[in-house]
Image (cartoon, rainbow, N blue to C red):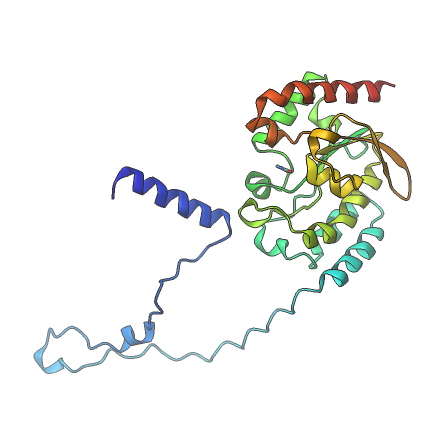
Length: 272
Ligand code: URA
């Protein structure tokens, strides 16, 4: 195998592992019992026909109980609403979400990525969904995007520990695919309750999916970024601004100058 081929095999295996594959299977089914019955090596001519003994039979394990089918999206959305409403604090909400079985993403993700930062923050950021590093650590925005977000905050004199950060979808979608509409709608009551419990003065939607989901504005992020909207919850109205997602800024650094303007406007709104 050439070094180039070896690299692509490694990349493919890395992709499988990150997508949740943890067992390798052959392409063709293999009869492992036949190996047990194969004639023993003929060291003794008289024993040529000897057959390896079968392993001691153990009582069969009780048949696995089939997992119940995942709830229909409508049922899952209703269940999420009721569960989210019942949370009286962020800690309670975290526990409720960790036990919630209505979103299939939890089965492929390593863990819930709830939220991070000051639970009484005046400034809250909401991204789309955790990536691989967030999934490993259980903390939002700790990968390259998160490090850029920290630097952007630092540039306006705000520490990460002063703000609160969360995502629309709190479980990593396999292979970093976009969350589906159903997954987003199922998780929506949770992020809405999280925003309500933090009660920030300013809410920043990072990227289009967060903007569309929380503010109902479906225009492209180039049109919405830097503009003020109102996020309405049952408890309060919050000034909300969409801005570029840091992952986009990593790919398109020229747009950082516009994000800088947005961050200055955010700083001014917090001072006012
Ligand atoms: N991108 C997101 O939208 N959220 C994270 O937590 C990390 C990357």
